[in-house]
Every structure is written in C-alpha cells, then in structure tokens.
Amino acid sequence: MKITDIEAIACVWPPPENHFWTSFRPIGRVSELIVRVHTDQGLVGIGEAHGAGMPFPGIYKQNADGSLEAEGASRVVVDVLKPLLLGEDPLDNERLWENMFRLNHQRGWATAGWGRPQIMTAIAGVDIALWDLKGKAADMPVYKLLGGTRNTVPCYITGGYYQEGKTISDLVQECETYADMGYNAIKLKIGGVSVEEDVARVSAVRQALGPDMDLMLDVNEGYDVPTAIRAARLLEPLNIRWLEEPVHWYDRVAGLGQVAASTTIPIASGENAVHRWDARDLIMQGGVKVMQFDCTRNSGVTECLKVASLCAMQNVRLAPHHDPQIHGHLVAALPVGEILETFPTADRDPIWAELFTIRPEIHNGELTLLDRPGWGIELNEDTLNARGIWA
Ligand SMILES: [Mg+2]
Image 1 (cartoon, rainbow, N blue to C red):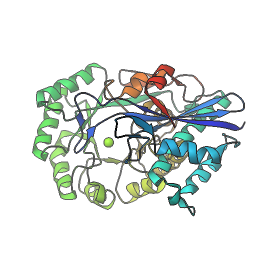
Image 2: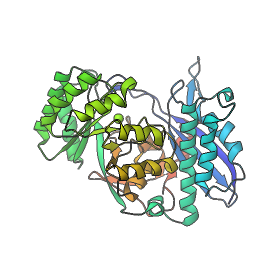
Image 3: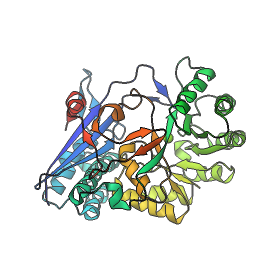
Image 4: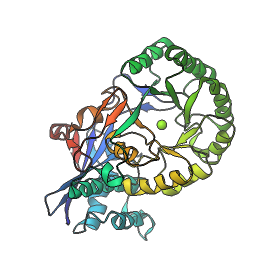
C-alpha cells in the first residue's frame, strides 16, 4: 500500500456564549485538525489533532477582517509532511514517525517557518491517521490491534468550570446532573479563586454527592509550589482521586515533584507533554502517578505507546486528556489504561456532538468501542463543509 494524498482540514466552532473558565483561561473557540491519508488501495485513514488559533500551537489564524485561514500545524501537514510521505507504505508507522520527528532537529528546520509545537501537532494528526489505516488494512479495531484487553472503558466527566454569576449551589446542581447521567467520577476546575473558596466549592460537592463519587481536581497550572502544597493539605480530607497540573508552567517538573512529595493525593499531569522525554521527566522527577499524555495534541499513537510502556514500568496509570473516540482504544487495550475524559454538553465539546456520523456511545459513564476497523469513526461531511478550512 502506498500513500497517494494527504488532506488537512481545520474545523473551527464559534466560541461558547457563556465562557467556561479554568484557573486563568477561558475555553474559547473549539477546533480540531482533521487529517485524511489517502492510499492507492482506496483505504482512507482518518486522524485528528487538537486545534487552537495561532500563535498557540495552532491550526488556524484569524485575519483582521475576522475571516479564518488554515495555518500552523494544518499547513505543516500539507506543505512539509505530505511531500515527505507521498509514495510511502502507511503501515510503516515507526519508520515514518522517525522521519517526521527528525524534522525538529535537522539543519534548516527553523527556516522552514514552523516551530516545533506546530510540527508535533501535525505529526499527531498524521500518525493517528496511519493507525486508522493499519486497523482498516487488518480489518480490525485499533484497540484489538493494540492488545484488546476489553472493549468498554470507564469515563469521567469534566465540569465545574468558573462561569459568570455561578454560585456554589449552581455547582452542586451541575454535579448532581452528572451523577444522574450515570457518572461516578467528576473532575472540577479549581485554582481560579482563593484556596479557601475552592475548598468550600469542593466540600459542598463532596457533601452533596457522598463518599462514593470520585472527585478529581484540575488546577490548570494555577498555583505556585507553596500554594499548591497548602491547597493539597486542605483538600486531602475530601478524598480526592487526583490533583491535576497544580503548579505554574515555569516549575511544572521539579516544583511538581515537591508538591507530589508533600501530599497523599496522587498527582496527575501530562496533557502538555510533547513527547516521551517530557512524560519521562514528569514521572521520574515530577512524581506523577496519573499520566495524561494526549496523543491527539502531540506526537500521536506511536509515541503514546512508548509513554505507556514507561507508565507500566513505574506503576503509573494512563488517563489521556480529551478525544475519547481516539484515546478510548488506548485505554481499552493497554493494562495501564485507567479512565477517559468526556464533556457534558455540545457547547463545551462540539467535536463529540457534531463531527461524526458514527462514533462510540457513552452510557452510564462507560464508553463502548464499536466492532469496526480502525478507529471505527465516520466523519460528518456536512460538518466538515460547514466548519472546515482546507489547508
Ligand atoms: Mg487538565
């Protein structure tokens, strides 16, 4: 089999009406880079990578007149990776990954006009499409190819965002809705108000939902080390399943290690890890017990399998960030797979709501993978035509 063409489509949704805030940042426009790898045998591999506007890792940019244009990783797929991959066998994912990754440390990479973040996001989209092709060529779901431990995966729901005018009783009501949906694990955002206010928010949820509901807390890098340690100690009595990215960006490895050493709450991180070496440092120096490597943000599945092997050696669990339709296969297949992240509403996750005509379903906090080849998903062409910008 040979690669004959590669498409990159940046899908961009309008921002939600009532902005959802994490500790420091509102969730703005949701976007996703779709990659389609075409072959001479008629099979088409579908890949996805996290979107963002430039100058963040970036798959699109907004022009002065408000129009949107494919940019960053979208352009890297078509302008840089496509010429490298045309004519290659898409099943050679390890060799092709090395060829793509090498662009980051070759003479001239910086003069190509793209930064490493854009290259790593582009690699993610392409690599994920190659795994779809591998599954389709073998007529097997990816989770079966990877080891096939199970076909159902537990999910948690992420909510508890800060929103204008939202009270603690609104927060409790929101979490009760999640319990009614059948979830028994909820992740709340903290770090955007004082530690005492956040402890009051989380206490109220714990009290309302009882001891059997798993609660995870995501700080989105909102604390310095002393504040993170103080917050963790105050939160320990609330039986927290994990504390996620508690430390500011500049001290996210060694500082995280100090926090991990001073609390009994397991530390989670990894959604911002770019490759296996980042993941290694978070595990070996940052004391991370729940690795959230997001192969749809960086590097793809080929790299995630290496991260998963390290997790297995270090007694760390894998709980990937976002995109359950892809990460579900990894969590299902690998014994280190723990749980998947999902979102409750279409304005927070329009990708899940609108991008597919066929995808797995979630019932009672559990995702069931389909017995279809590859990722088992079909894209909604109407959504692609309405939201997509071809690079
Ligand atoms: Mg997070």
